[in-house]
Length: 391
Image (cartoon, rainbow, N blue to C red; front, side, top):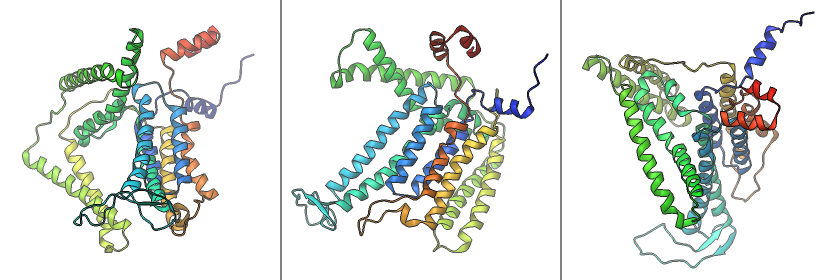
């Protein structure tokens, strides 16, 4: 007796969760949504929840590629920013206004240096201002680091529109610096241990820094050769007038978009500087992109598809940013804790649910494909049948 055939819905659901790399644009839209949400608040409880969501998604869906290993560097940068903001408040922002925690010896400055003081009394309000601002900036940077850890920068370059191909190449190369440095440091440290190197701390800096710099130069030369062999920078035969017109449309459109966004955010500006100018700028920018894209001739091998999983991931981040933007008008007191009088930060259940929407990719995004090392390690822990399925 033959087994019943699977339903089309079951087949689609099974195919949805098959391991595959997600479109890099989806991860960037998700991360930018979280970053926008972080920019709307200074509440450390909400910012800590956004950090937890970003870390959970990265741990659940990142692979073992070099750019995925650089996430901890962004976390270290975020910690450094918070510490420096608090230290800046202690050194330059000390004041006797509020609850004074301690007093440092004040350094006298010349009379022409007005408005600046070194050390002196340090209040709790001053330290909290530095901590809140630093934590907000650190959260935004870590969200961008999460996108850099989850999205393949090389595949991201394929998805850039033709009009932004040159700019996109520069951005992708810049975003690849941290992951490549992290990979180089790991390989150099592993090689030192194999050769019996026992130096640690500053003593090992010379033995690590020089090989890392040499490896970075080698990678730069290989990248330049690869870009030159693939015709990077070549343009189609377009008249000078067409190039100038396309560039002017793009530049004026982007300026119109910036002014329109500012007009929508600032209620004191005239109405015509808001949505109307934003729409005109978008139309001009799109027209400039279309005209500029005709000057670039390129082909794509296996373009990355945008399927249901990409839409779910992108919408989860956009929804968090949009709801947090609306919460700024509904519950502004929860997003900006009061420092005068000094109050403990609070958070409501709707805000918690709003931020937790950003954690949906940890469950709803397709798993990361297994690498050769993971398949080999699975073979030593499971039966041969499991290894055969993984292959």
